[in-house]
Amino acid sequence: MKKNEKVLMYLIKNHNEISHIRSLERELKVSAPSISEMIKEWEKEGLVIVKKVGNTVIPIFSFSEKANLTAKLLFIKEKEDASPYIRRWITQLNEIKNADLILLFGGVLNKEEKANDIDVVFVTSQKNLKELQKEIESMNKINLKIIHPIYQSKEDLINNIKKRDKIIINAIKGIVIKGEEEFLKILKK
Image (cartoon, rainbow, N blue to C red):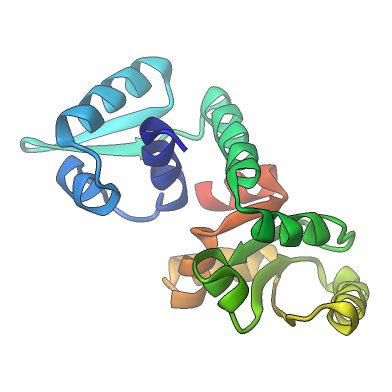
């Protein structure tokens, strides 16, 4: 991903954290002047809202219609830019029918083939849970690596984000496989 895409994606996935230009510079290894220019442009475009606390500029993803469309494009690009090994998992997980939102995260994104298992958050309704579990069991029978599912309802996911549950916070920084629209609605809440 390009620097500006990387910074905007960070603001989307870390929406529940307060990030100022210096923290973004440290976290993303992008210069503060570059980030400042990006933020000015995104504010004009309606992608971010800028809050000022003293001299500190805090950019916040806006969740406007245009911002959401931009985010969806970034989610697609993130999947396309993934390594072939990760794209293999993206393709397989995308076949799942009984989940409204699927987030791939954990060791597979960093260690790839060396990861012990495949960590995935599945957001589904109680009505679809048993069928989703069957889908995962079926996949786990043929895969060399086991899919380690974390099942959540939409409400569970929202509550776990608010509680800053470490696993869920890590998961929302992963790759959105399916349910981009739902993901943005959940983050907005």
